Image (cartoon, rainbow, N blue to C red):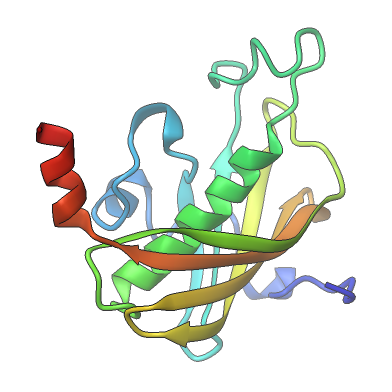
Length: 171
C-alpha cells in the first residue's frame, strides 16, 4: 500500500456514467436490504482486472442513527463490505472462480484514512492480484470520497458451498 496513486486513474472513468445499476448488481450478488452496500458500477476492464463502483450514502442509512449519535460515520466494516461486494460482482460476472457464491476469505493491510459521512459517495476501486480458480481470489482495493482516499486494503474471497448453506437454513 505504499503508493499514493489510485489503483485506477480517476481520468479513466466517469462516476456519473453507470454501466451496472443495483438491478444488474443483484443478478450477480446475493446481498439484499440493509447489507447491500454497492449502488452502481462505473468501470470494468478485464485486461487490467480492474473495476470501479460506488456506494451512495444518505441520512436514511441504517448505521446513521447509532454510529455515532451526533456525528454519523460509515463504519469501516461496511466500507470493507462494499469493496467485497464490488470484487464479488466482478468475479461472478466473469466466472473467475467457477462457483455460485463468494464469501470473505480474509483481509490484509486495511487502513482507514478518512471519514465517510451521510450524503457522501464512496467510490471504490478494486484490482485483482491473484486467482486460484475454485480456491481463492486476492484483490487490492481503495475507497475515495471526492478523490480523497478514505480506506485501502487487500481482500480475499473464497467460494462458499451455496447449496449446503441453503439446506442448512431450511432445516
